Length: 242
Image (cartoon, rainbow, N blue to C red; front, side, top):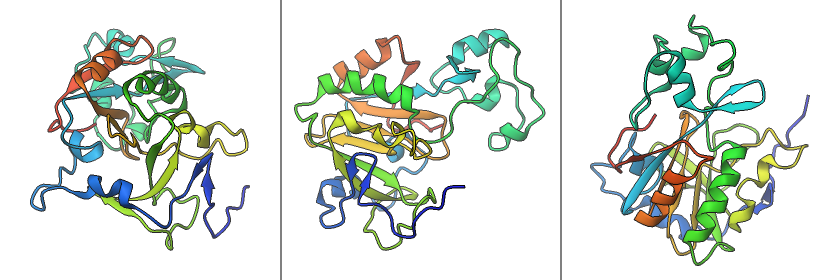
């Protein structure tokens, strides 16, 4: 069993941990005090973008990713922007569906969608699209929830988003998935939040979700919705997250 050090690393994957200056993240803390957006797309991602997309984390059949619409067809159901996984498979509980008595469908899916920040294979597809919609792909910022438990982040400065404290990381967009690329560190989560220095878009995920949310320009979101490697749906910043 791997023994994690008490002190967190200075570099997470290939992303340096920022301990001195959290100014690049302060814009994410500027929310109305009476409505911080908790549980909404804007709360998980960021408010104020022209358009938003919900990108569904695929289920699995062995090592093969499986789209939700393929699973839906097996249950004679359909998928929309508001679809929740447990309802799609007929599970009774939105939280305990992994322990529910609803079985997988042989030959269709055998593993639930990844619950947490963006899956590594999806991240590579996102990187290829998002790099086309920022002037600063070599200078990006990231938020990593301090509660994942691999390291003791208690003495590391954090910035706050609705319901979460985040560690600030820095690095080029192409390194967004670097924590999961080292075979010796593949258990590390990819950051929950990504945004470029020019704030052209923002990616948001969460430990409790089976979707990733992206806010950006109309052109950026339109390209994400049309990308064959992603199962994406248009949503509003006030939409409830799943």
